[in-house]
Image 1 (tube, chains in turn blue, orange):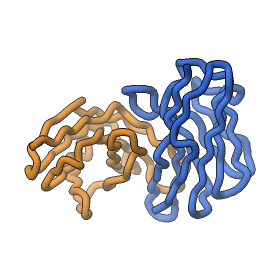
Image 2: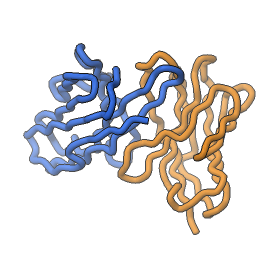
Image 3: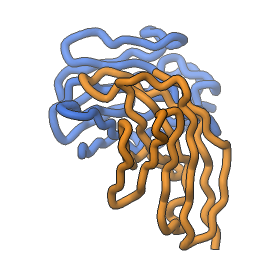
Image 4: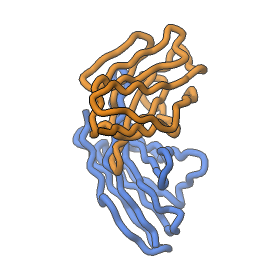
Length: 115
Length: 112
């Protein structure tokens, strides 16, 4: 398995500000994923982050709103920019183990409330 | 990735078996069936996966029909701690980079 630590675990932010969420993995992984889970909803993939290349964003998500960094094989950040109340969600980091059948592991998430 | 269909909610008495169905009629030959669960306020947790044979681990059993168009996750002796949203996902399992597409899942409520 993989141990994933996310910081902060929760935050309350003012609209118009930005928040950077950190994701630290206990081992090197090629691919890291960021998901959003809006209240009462399922998980939606925001983007895939590979080390050494730009993140790949899913439809409906753009780099200006959700810039992502991936400086090494164990760390990534997601920034939620110019926040509005609609950005209130749980943001989750995920990694995959490949080599044989792929398994995905998730952090505990960052619960963001925008007021 | 193939789309899955699950009932929105199910109830189960503690100590009884919980049988959670999933339909994936458009599954491709190289796609596996994965099950995850999400306990309230936590990240999803991997449970089990399979291709075409039935699988069992310390958490659950997975029964896949012969035509692979549906499957059932079985929690043999459900406890209150198994109350969670259970997601059935189908995806290509090897090579990495194949995103997980979460549906709405089944909210399982285990009661005394």
